[in-house]
Amino acid sequence: MKREIALFGAQCLRQKCAWVAEVDDAIRALVADLFDSMRAAEGVGLAAPQIGVLKRVCAVDVTVHQPDCPPVVLINPKVTGHEGEQIGEEGCLSFPDLYGDVKRYAWVEVEAIGLDGQPFKTEGEGFYARALQHEIDHLDGKLFIDHLSPLKRQLMRGALKRLKKESAAQAKASVIDIT
Ligand code: NI
Image (cartoon, rainbow, N blue to C red; front, side):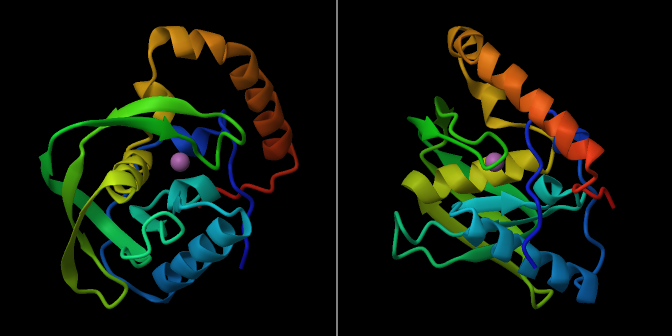
């Protein structure tokens, strides 16, 4: 089911998410919702806190940029290796139409649990590596704007203020249900 995506300003985006103890029906339903919501918004990644669920679960699908990287579900993901650096433009579904240059590792290796409950590793570079780091950041309440230069953040101030207002309206309509 497609869920409303929390906008910058929502409290659920700034929380440290809980580790998942077991991949049960609730987690499987959450993953289905993540994919439905991400695809409806034409995003390349989405983390559970963005739909108000404070659990360490995220989805990444960068096939439009890197067809050799299949969509992936990451439960309890951890970056277990990294190399180099890359600087590139980044956005986020919680910040519609806002983009900024973010420095990330060029290559990462991530260890996680899959939908089948089994641990697995995934690795990659370029945009895939960037998306993995961005989504894992979300699980600790960290957002891409935290990585921007002070000047760029200053330039975004007006837009961020508007987003906070919108997110307050969103919370009032209680479309974001924090579980
Ligand atoms: Ni994001």
